[in-house]
Image (cartoon, rainbow, N blue to C red):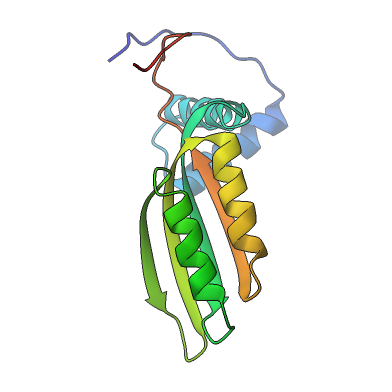
Length: 145
């Protein structure tokens, strides 16, 4: 684990007061852990903006399984992108709807493309892609052989 470094932060009383209320609501034991989480969150957010950056994602979507072709389209795209789709989990929500979660890995551009294709299928009612990364330092130029 990295060495902890102390630094000072200046902010208005009212902002600090709101921050303290927020961290108390969320169950933090101290300001430092809350600040670390906020910084990590911003770094992940920044990282997943780089189109060629390698990330992981979760695509959650609900679709109407009665709509013709939707299951075939979903199966085809899962085969087309088998290197990026790590796994899928399927739940029957009610008589008409299914919920699927697809776990993805790859570059941001590819994962967004997969999400856009799936979410645009006729019969897919709603969905959302969430991207994340481990924030481990990666060498600037890695080449796979």
